[in-house]
Amino acid sequence: FEDGRSALQRVNAATFAAGVSVKCGNETCGYVREARQDVTCAEAYATSFDPGTFRDDTNSLGAAVMVGRSCNLQSDLQRSEGIALSAFNFLANNGQDEALQFDGLINIGLYVADDISEFVTNSPATSRLPTLHMALEMWFTVDD
Image (cartoon, rainbow, N blue to C red; front, side):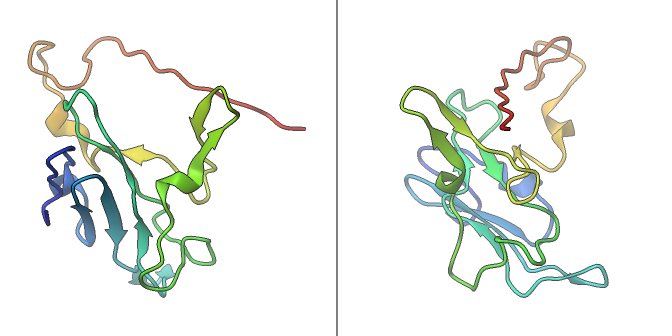
């Protein structure tokens, strides 16, 4: 679907900035941000991840989308048209645990929207995000 809908996952594609598209097939969604061309960034190619989403099994917020940096000059994300990195490039597994790597350079995080104000209300009964407390699990490793 062109609007980010899928029979198997929901993406808040309309909440992302202009120049961004999230297109879904039956199984996965791909992310594309048009090449940035301004005085501070002159990218040659669009930024793309395919697949580029992680499904929200609760179907509450929608899939988390891998977006990359706002400017990818001289980055591994600057790839010729039609060649995309995948969310799979950032998965790690030691045979027991699985993790997603965030390096701050290429994979800066996962987003459900550019602006989350539509997910938060003043009422815990209607808000799609927590209004008082939230738990977050993270795993950090530091190598020598």
